[in-house]
Image (cartoon, rainbow, N blue to C red; front, side, top):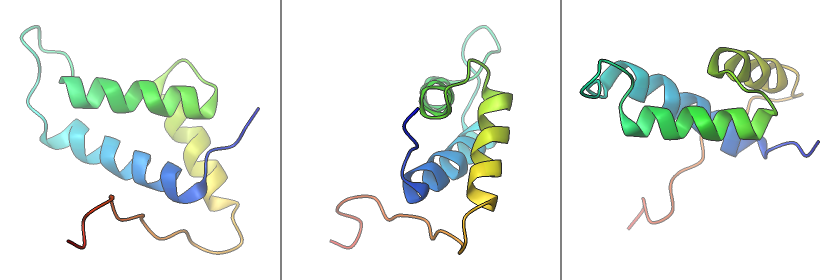
Length: 79
């Protein structure tokens, strides 16, 4: 399995955690669209089918890195 770039993975985890807390729920009380999209991307990136397992895998991979990975700035953020 291919491994996602650590900075991209770190950003996905951070964005998911933020969206899960701040994004309004959808009409049925489920996660909003951004949270769902990030959960899907995390699952694909980690080869899992459940966001909790995806987060576990991502955190485990990031913790195993020899140096901390800074959060990547989105394209155009410095403009």
